[in-house]
Length: 544
Ligand SMILES: *[C@@H]1O[C@H](CO)[C@@H](O)[C@H](O)[C@H]1NC(C)=O
Ligand SMILES: *[C@@H]1O[C@H](CO)[C@@H](O)[C@H](O)[C@H]1NC(C)=O
Ligand SMILES: *[C@@H]1O[C@H](CO)[C@@H](O)[C@H](O)[C@H]1NC(C)=O
Ligand SMILES: *[C@@H]1O[C@H](CO)[C@@H](O)[C@H](O)[C@H]1NC(C)=O
Ligand SMILES: *[C@@H]1O[C@H](CO)[C@@H](O)[C@H](O)[C@H]1NC(C)=O
Ligand SMILES: *[C@@H]1O[C@H](CO)[C@@H](O)[C@H](O)[C@H]1NC(C)=O
Ligand SMILES: *[C@@H]1O[C@H](CO)[C@@H](O)[C@H](O)[C@H]1NC(C)=O
Ligand SMILES: *[C@@H]1O[C@H](CO)[C@@H](O)[C@H](O)[C@H]1NC(C)=O
Ligand SMILES: *[C@@H]1O[C@H](CO)[C@@H](O)[C@H](O)[C@H]1NC(C)=O
Ligand SMILES: *[C@@H]1O[C@H](CO)[C@@H](O)[C@H](O)[C@H]1NC(C)=O
Image 1: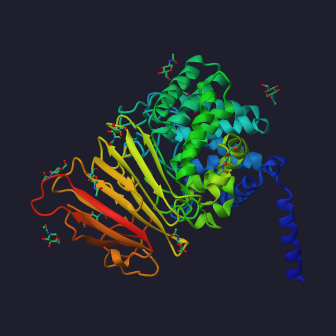
Image 2 (image 1 turned 60 degrees about the vertical axis):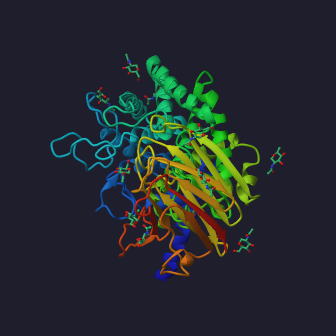
Image 3 (image 1 turned 90 degrees about the horizontal axis):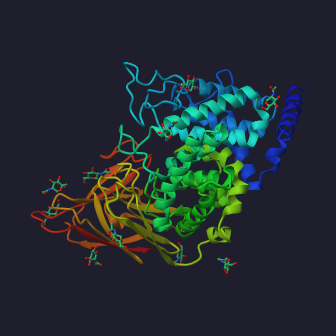
């Protein structure tokens, strides 16, 4: 009897819950609605209502909370508007603003705490460290979310909360105006596409709301610089990234949706968004569910294994099963980005209205072998434009970019996210293998042809090395050389010493350390003793 009651009760609850979607959620297109509902259900489990924050995802932070995902969840609560969702959202928003930095003299003024537990940035034992104790990009991540809250759900918020949000956006915009690339360790040049696009938008929107012409004009000026850079090659400076192309498309959608006709953002947003999607459609390999390389900034080597923001866009356009997400994305690496899902769901139908013609068809199945080429320019780190060339075939892709930069590891000086030459292939028609050149040089001349990757270091010398991060595979777990890499035949020539070093980087052992959660084999070529000249390596591939 008890059991029966319980079953009845839970059945009743299920229908109660599903019956409680707001008209707003019901109005979302089917894919967006599914993504919205599934991501919110996942986040509900991390919500601590008594605190008015979400716990940090992943269960590895001793129950500390996290600010940014709480903001995204709060927007989702406003959209869901069921039970006490709206008051819970207001509680979170008020908390986040209470934790916003309020001292105009601080470099981090108007920025948001990363977690409510942290000491005051700049206090004796918590020195300011950009992208450490404060992350200046969070003004943009949270600011854009607040704008969406006002634009989409302002009618649900009390006047007091709305005023508070506007004041918060005013401070965030002023703080963002302190950011100048190359000053105070900051790197916000207009070429740093994703936060630059968000800053221009929030400044333009907030200035108009507050009737602050100077703020409005600043937004237009920032946008103008981004547009000028874009117009050089019809590409974003930060090009082809599973994560950051997703943020830039988000920002360009905001440019296109929420500003009046007199803004350069309204005028240019749609065409920049379409050109970006045209490149994505060329580089996306539906059979591998990966964007072929090279990747300016990647948080993994196979999009089927980590949550990327592009995967969330693909979900809204193609459906979940054709995106690179598994059924339960919360098990994937880089899971925190899954918390963007409510925002993309809310923007989905407008975003889809801007897409290039028959994009769905182009993204749905691999159509034909092709070579894609493009240029992109990221001053002041790029001394000349980068030249990108990618060959895609049914079972094998090879993509690389030539570059000449002031730093190693791309503009974010991260050797683990800059992937200037990438090979991917299908193993047994389903698993994806990868080889990525680990960047160790300030310059690379790369030539891509069907089946061939030719790598030269114009500024290299006898100490140069070619390190390849190579996927593990199920069939041949212990790898002793290229011949053990499953699904691919590799031939190597060039003036490097062709006797290569091999190391393993594993979770539980091996010499190297995991990169972005991925285990890998490290194939490294050095130059022969007494080498003089320009280091060169030519790799030939055949999928088998
Ligand atoms: C909220 O503000 C609007 C317009 O500013 C006003 O019409 C309304 O009366 C206010 N509501 C309350 C409860 O103060
Ligand atoms: C905005 O900044 C001012 C200082 O200019 C500060 O007094 C105020 O509390 C801040 N507002 C919010 C909402 O943080
Ligand atoms: C106008 O905006 C610029 C850029 O945001 C800022 O540097 C300047 O201080 C602002 N001036 C005033 C008077 O608000
Ligand atoms: C896309 O649309 C254009 C114009 O409507 C058409 O000519 C072209 O064949 C379509 N391409 C695909 C791949 O369906
Ligand atoms: C890319 O190509 C242009 C010519 O279109 C050339 O001027 C530039 O130097 C090349 N970039 C690199 C890094 O080789
Ligand atoms: C791709 O691989 C599949 C099986 O793994 C094979 O059947 C097919 O012939 C290959 N296609 C090409 C073009 O090599
Ligand atoms: C590889 O590229 C370099 C220039 O970048 C060129 O000199 C060399 O001939 C190329 N090698 C092959 C085998 O194509
Ligand atoms: C090779 O170049 C690197 C970087 O410029 C430099 O640090 C190194 O000393 C050079 N090695 C030799 C043997 O010249
Ligand atoms: C790869 O192995 C070489 C030695 O062969 C080592 O110097 C290098 O640090 C390793 N790189 C990575 C990314 O593990
Ligand atoms: C190439 O590397 C191997 C292994 O490290 C070494 O034994 C050999 O002497 C090297 N050859 C030259 C020409 O440097």
